[in-house]
Length: 402
Image (cartoon, rainbow, N blue to C red; front, side, top):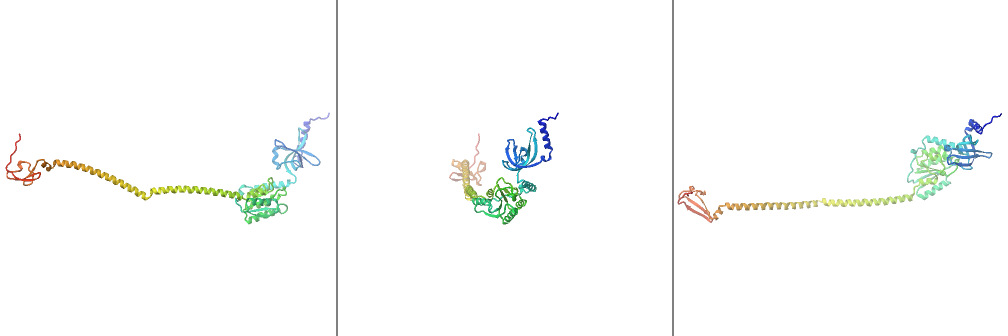
């Protein structure tokens, strides 16, 4: 009896055969894209076909790094991957790891290799990027003299600032000798002393743009002392020159916008700055006038005339005070003198005389106070109110006290 196998066994056997085949483990397949579908999971399902047949393909989401463009119907591509069997359906398919547009594969490999090499050398490092001058007066342009790129740059420069000088080096931008022409243009404009340089061209295929992927052009841009704006192709095109340049513009028109300052905007900024300066000056003058008035008031207060006036007033006050004190002292002295006068009046002999009394002096001028101070026939002087009476002692008599 013959051996009977299940479908699963057969599919597993075939899968094992595919797995053991070395060639199918890493294979390049060229064809036209059809039935391309981007799944919500991130996987891409499509078919490759040519005039003789079709093969199913899938690129899982984890492999999307190997795809640098968006796939579409009818594209001619080269897919690198492995062929294996999907056991559930028993069908084989190509599991893609890298997908490139046909005709650009070799150039793309060369581009990636040079990019990695120059990046490792530090030529893309941001610390080497030179800033653009804010107000460039002379702008150098390295591009084809008859292309759309130079016309776009001229139109935008004329609109933004007609006073900027544009210096064109008519370079060959594709084909044999293009890289040498671009390098000469960069070096010549650098010696001419331009403020900033635009190096680029309009869009095209990778072959058309290849001169800007050459190492010689990259080194010329890197060694240039003048800031360089790379403006190669359209926004989606990327070249080695874009990585090396000090600034990348998506298009030549955008490069002109970056290099040429807008004079109308500058005039507006200057007018605004002038008004702001005038406003600040007015405020400053107003503040200084206020300070001057304060100093004037302070000076008036501290003026010597005011000081003299204050001292004069102080002297007047002191004089009034002194006069008041003196009058007070005089009044008190007059009062005391009146008291003393009254007292003296009570003690004065003349006052006593006015009351009918008199006093007697002997011949020696001494006052006679007792009968013992005189003797009979002594000459006496008797003082009365209106004069002196001269007398002689007739006798003395001692008065008896009971």
